[in-house]
Image (cartoon, rainbow, N blue to C red; front, side, top):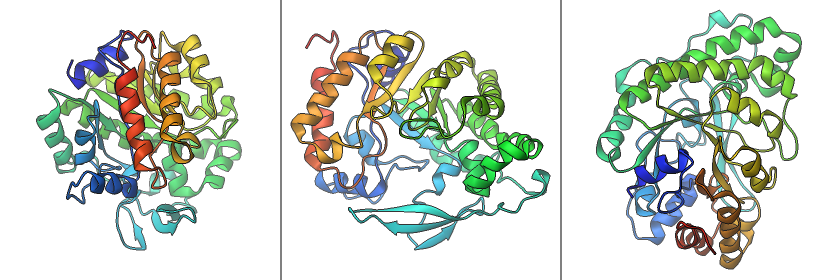
Length: 360
């Protein structure tokens, strides 16, 4: 099968030749792997619209083109910078190795009226040149995903600050509804553009899970976010009724998984195994959802051995992969502290043991 056929077969809950494979990296980790393979390139995939050489080298079945607020992460090398939304970012060093960016300025912290700020223009064709090139060059062979993550809830607090937005949802409800309605505009436009260009999957996302509970009550999520995600999916399917939808949220979100299914979600990412049991979710929802992720990035990949990485991959394949419905991947970006040997162990195990029928 081609990578595209493999992914689309798995999403349709049928067994392809093998379980599709994908992974995503921080820029530092990505550059480390490129250097290991002797690839002389500074281009990385992480939150960029053009992609990079690593997914092709590692034979990923999915290629991702990124548009929108998530591209603010790692956007510039300067110690501090401001993105097109006015959000201020700063680089920080991780004591255990590597560096990362965090928001340090929220431009709408004191916003009084959601009508009084402008959203960046996402209807400009020039914004999508790299996406168009990726689709034209690779779209026949690979499954192409359009990433418009940090979609609504995350964008809201990037702009206002997390405490302010949580207060909005509890004590300034009219303001919050109006604010979320305005923020929906960018993703409907951007997602629609990518779908028109010919992507196979559209990926939205907002983190609403913590390690062992949700960041907000499920009822609050249903009041503010669920109906807007439903509308976003509806608008996407007006452009292409066959488009597949993916949603990213870290952490524990079991109470709202049936809600995602109700509004037409096809793929849930990343199914963080330290927060939710992938085998349990497969039994409950595996006939209706595809799970993308499931491989532990909190303990096994950074601190385990190649042997323990292999066993982790085999466990997820065995308990989640049968009948299709799995795209195996680490449950978030691979970090700089993950060894090359463990990274290679993930790919080797996924390809060796991921061939159907899964009979190991």
